[in-house]
Length: 336
Image 1 (tube, rainbow, N blue to C red):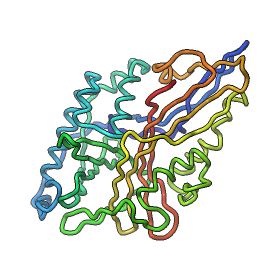
Image 2: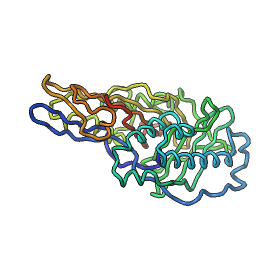
Image 3: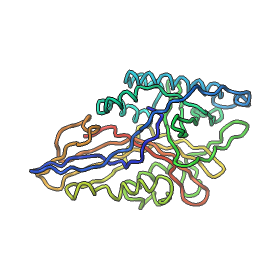
Image 4: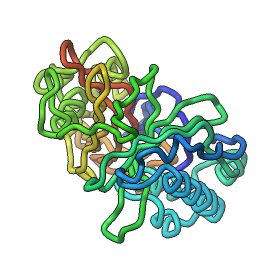
């Protein structure tokens, strides 16, 4: 997965409804964009090692994990090798990355060249929980000046793999640290209106119902929520009444949620996943993908098109007021 910031686009697909005459339907899905390039990461300082023997790993070790990820990801992108990438990525991020690699044939020659260009992380910082945990978070800056929050987890094979990568839409509150150890939060413990373990369902409810159920607890006016609500509200506009369109939550590839305490609440990093279904309203109509990324999976004209999306979100849970979606992103991982 390229460490990049996407343009703001709703998670809708492009379809063509074909009958006697063809009607083009437009839309798009959320995906990663510009690759980051920068200079070498900073050296660790004595402060980096202060009390970090109590953490799940030291900051020096965390730097090496990020270095290894950088090198391996660059090689995997250059060779378009999902198996190599799987040695350093897992979970929701790997689902998105694997989809990117599968959809490379749909890119232009210029985009393919850019995809293979190497990247580096700079201005690194780490949020390392106490021993007994299996994960840590890292922040870094891309060449575009965007700040990314990443989560690395120690997989069953005992290898550190990056499982989340998000870009807050506004400055993110700094996680709390006690003597250099990040303060984590329980995923079932509510902070204000939601517990971290409820965030996945709340975000997906914005797509499914426009926030009538658990999504009601989320702010509908700040952060990224307005973009999701627009996607829900306009989901059928481009089909001109010739198809029914709806979203259905599905099981994320990885269900684990991560939570860090801050002075202004809890940062929840959660998995997302849903199915988007288009069904024609008249038996003589057929649909075929007009979007070249969808067509990678299935080019056939058919009465229904089902697109599967895997994603992730970063949400701030304050003790008072409504939670804010700081970032979310999906990738089309299959089209049937």
